[in-house]
Length: 362
Ligand code: PLP
Ligand code: COI
Image 1: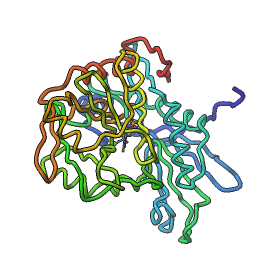
Image 2: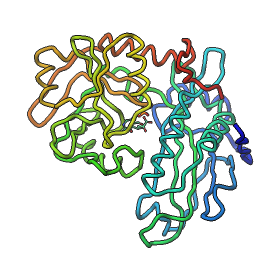
Image 3: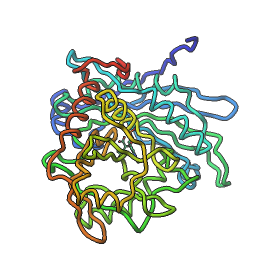
Image 4: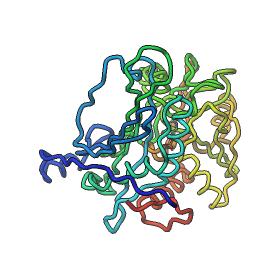
């Protein structure tokens, strides 16, 4: 390739916590609360393009109160992780896929596109400087949150002419508390997440804002997560608030809803479908009606159900709840779910060979 690496100007943090304090924070980080020392920031100005790549001590942003992101929600993000391999090296999992999806999300939201090389350079250089914040593999990973906001001060409704692309990082243990076992999921029938032609397949903040009342309702019903149905018929399962969904049927088939514009094309989803094919499972990307799913849970045709995503990894779903009642799927983690999770994690953490070339050393 002829593209040269973008060199980020580094301003190191001078008042970082002590190694002892950091070790204490990393022992039990939860999700999304223990942040690393630095952030990568790149600025876009129309006519000038992307410029001023910097690594700065993590700090508050200064925004004009008229910044477009605050009014019209021109915001997109990614979720990916840095893993600590057995030899201590930091590594990323399919970062190129995140860079591509980020570019597609930008296109959908009429934002400046971040070149994939620049995205990868920002992520790599942040992980390099903050590698000490990657937890031990038994505890978790360093979760990376690249995002972009429209910063132009202008209240006219139009694509902004100024943006900031930023990467922050936080230590991540289990997304769901570990002792909870299979999670329970609320089947949302009142609101929808996305419709055909909408922004469902883009990773934009607005999709998540729109999902929060359903997530609140799930919590009120004692559920961990919410499952959305399609907007047109309220018949087909689509995805969850922050993860995709997969079913294991009694004939060994792995089934998941197809990508038709309304669900996020998960990188974990794609990886698991590939690994399942490698294992000789029949993989179906086909619509699954919620009533069929209930019937299959009752008859035993549905053996396992799980959520998958960067934060959730592979999380078994034990029960589905809806206004009509509770459907028990599986009280324990199913065999296929456990096997797929292990195969995926062994590659991500560098404990197993990487036949698909998914792992990138930092
Ligand atoms: N669906 C939604 C709505 C998500 O937020 C996520 C998480 O990023 C996923 C699916 C899974 O995507 P990935 O596996 O790329 O993390
Ligand atoms: C991710 O898995 O990376 C997400 O963005 C989902 C969110 C629930 C944390």
